Length: 483
Image 1 (cartoon, rainbow, N blue to C red):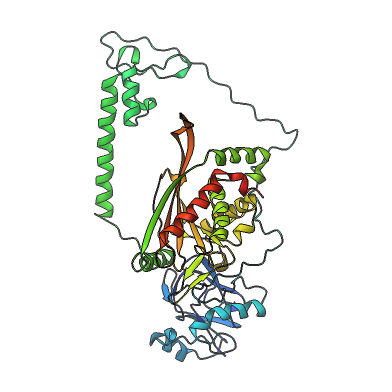
Image 2: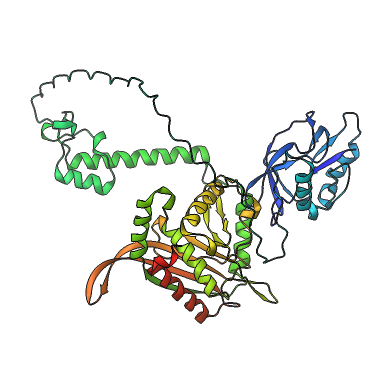
């Protein structure tokens, strides 16, 4: 019996998927569990597996096409089986009706596609599709079981020459040619002559102008005495660069036109939808506080001296402090569910990670129970796999609070948009040296500015302020975080 291959809900929030790549061609023999295609969901690139045996008779979607969940993508059947009615129903829109008869002809609705993922795990060991966590809106998911050797293998080191292998001798340098005699005259056509040690000769004014205008002296031919680069050489180089830039811009306009349209990816569509839902109906207020991070900076240095496995970033320290502060303020560790506020007894902190075409928030489950270096190692692993689009759905759903850090980009302060149904998010700026008064004297201290976005329906101003006070106390006394 023919098997319909439909666009499945490969993540809890997926509404449509984009077919990235077909791994099987029409006419290929298919076994249940074979990977048919790669599909871009709203968060990652997942594998679409076969749920029946036979031959891939017809592919109904092209690579790059976006299709709603339940859309018919292909048909698997016996070589001599008539599939005209199935293909015809796809053209009439039947593929979008939610019928997904994928295992021996058994039918199921598109809404149960996530359950079909679990069925595949039981029926075949070849399937790489994860089971989406079943949860109601706003319910924190149970963290996945830790696998043996859960941390990814470290990247392989660069190859080294075999012991005892002879080193490659450096090529002999040719003798320097004698400098040609300088022609008589005013010297305006002389080539630039490097000074002793190969350094380009230039006047102090020329060097300053070159620095201000971002011009490299190495590519300029000096016209001053002895080939020295002078002011007029810098000005001529600047004019030539502007002309070249205008020429390149004109060529780009001629070939590409006045603009180009960039198609939305699935993750960008989801970001737009989620943030519109958040920024409109949620009454948000913001609390900003600045804390002394000098001791936290010293702690980082001390941990790094203990070895690479103990290294921690400012973001790791903030996440640990947030987790412990949430334990003292459960009213902030909550979801707004419309008719009730759900306060969680477990603390799952999401961290915002910028990827090539959007943003994703992998989750550190039970972050308050993790050591600082456990948080550091797990955060690096999640961030790396997030950028490679290799996270499983259960790794980026179920958070109870979020942290977004732009300090590494030199941002002092910003406000982050709440990820519903969470009731708060913390925006972290950069840690910078500032002159402050300590015991009546001006000293340099490391300062860190934090801004908390609060959903006023669940978190009042005083509640948010007390949370920030607790958080600041832990950041300023980071030994509280080391256990």
